[in-house]
Length: 239
Ligand SMILES: *[C@@H]1O[C@H](CO)[C@@H](O)[C@H](O)[C@H]1NC(C)=O
Ligand SMILES: *[C@@H]1O[C@H](CO)[C@@H](O)[C@H](O)[C@H]1NC(C)=O
Image 1 (spheres, rainbow, N blue to C red):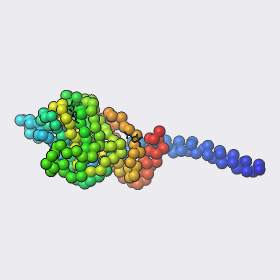
Image 2: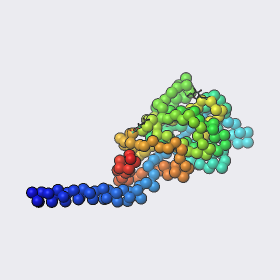
Image 3: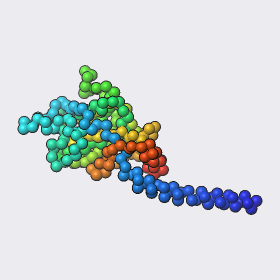
Image 4: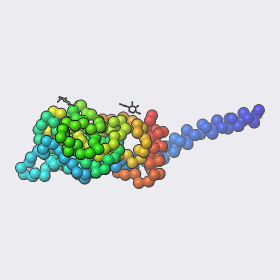
C-alpha cells in the first residue's frame, strides 16, 4: 500500500516536470525556428498580366507594367516598382504560378500615394488561364479572400486563403470601382511545412509591417525544421 502510494507520488512528480521541460524546449525552439522563414513565394518572377490596360507613361513605357508586382523589389520611395492600370470600373491583376499548388497566404503591398484606391477587391484562384474564357474578367474562381476597406499607405495586407488554403495555378486580384489598381508587390505564399495542416492557422492581423512581412519569404530546407514548426504551431500558436 505504502509502496503503491509512493509510486503514484513519484509519477505525479515526473508529470509535474513535464510542463517545465516542454517550456524550456519551446524556448529553444522559439530561438531556432521563429525567425526562420516558413513560406516560399510562388509568384516571384512569374508571368503576369493586368487590365484593362497598363497606365501609359510616355517617357518610359516599361513603368507600371504588371511584372513590377513580382520583381521582388519593395522600394516604396518611388512608384517605379509598382504596377498601375488605367482607370476603369473593373481592374485586375493576374499571375501564372506555372503549376497548380496549394496557396496558403497572399501578401499585397500597397503604394504610398492614392493608397485608398486599393479597396473592395477579391483574390480568386483558377486552375486554367481565366483570360482564355470569353466572359473574362466576369468569371469567378475559387475565392481566396475579400478586402472591402482601403489598405493603408505603403502597407502590407496579408490574407489566409479561404482560412486555410486554396489550390490553383492562376491567382487574380480583381477590383470594382475606385479608379486604377496599383500594386507594389504581391507574394503568393505556400507553406512547405503545411502538409495536411489546413485550418491550423490563427487569423493573421490584416496589416503587417514591412519588416514583419519580409520574414515570411524563404524556404524550409529540412523535414526536421518542418517538424519543429508543426510542433510549435500545435503547442503555441493555437493558444
Ligand atoms: C465593390 O465591389 C462590389 C463587387 O464585389 C460591387 O458590387 C460594388 O459596387 C463595389 N463598391 C463600390 C463602392 O464600388
Ligand atoms: C478559420 O479556422 C479556424 C480554425 O479551424 C476556426 O476556428 C475559424 O472559425 C475559421 N474562421 C472562418 C472565418 O471560417
